[in-house]
Length: 142
Image (cartoon, rainbow, N blue to C red; front, side):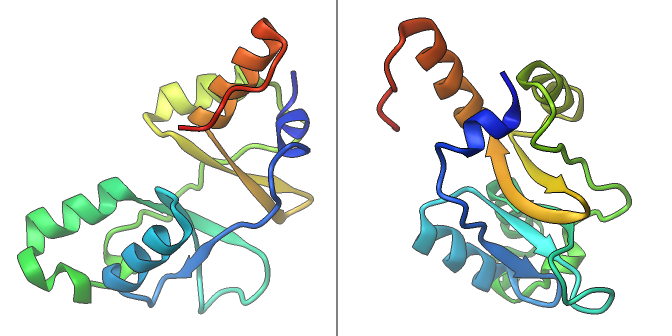
């Protein structure tokens, strides 16, 4: 099974946050969209569809642990490492993606095709697709 097979069943909308936004804005975006990770875009280097990192619930927790109530004012750029974005393409297999996620201890991967952000795939997406392949019916989202 390929990443693209899973993406065809998902809504293509990707929620992003800019590096210069605050943790408070990022947290509100995650809450409003009922998601646990945002793709981070670099406002300086690119205004296009280029991902430079991921901002997750773990980053929110880390910000609160390090900065207390002032965490809402911390810039996303202070918490996101952009040295090397871990990503996949829609032509990658689920096994390749699971290996990447396990090796890097992450649960969300941006999907980039031809240098363009097309989606995000999560460990939950993979588990649901595998359940569907085994059971033959879609599983309800939790």
